[in-house]
Image 1 (cartoon, helix red, strand yellow):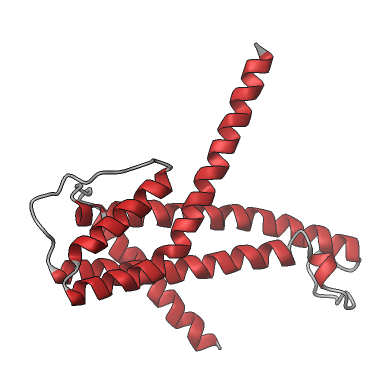
Image 2 (cartoon, rainbow, N blue to C red; image 1 turned 135 degrees about the vertical axis):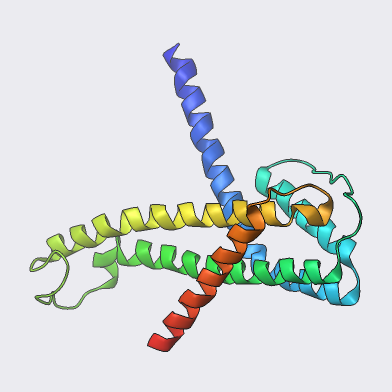
Length: 196
């Protein structure tokens, strides 16, 4: 019984890791595929955009195939362009979050390997190197978990948003929530650029 339970727990953990990896890959592709979607809208290839998002959604979910119903007709070019634009904004936000994950890992648990300077009085966990390393690691680990959770959420929300492009219905709250998230990302980027 315990052997079966252990195997089930290992399979569940492996499944979660795979789903997270697929969501991160989906996030990494949002910006380039969003640009392609905008180009498809301009060039009149709206069905190509729908097929591309359908393949990506199937990949994110780990399915061999996902077939759209065809919907009530081809979406308007403006709708396809808007979905592409929102996808680009969310993709850039995802890239920024991935950069933060990388920075948090390097400057957190591995802080002592990358920072060889003197420990200043204001350093977190100072005045000793061991204390500073521990403090950086303890602060970084929850940040990494939160960033990964946010990345998975962005992938899930955006995947729901583009469902109408390949003929599947999206929930009514998805478009307003995605617009609010994209506007928040743009406001954050603007504020961050003002600090440079």
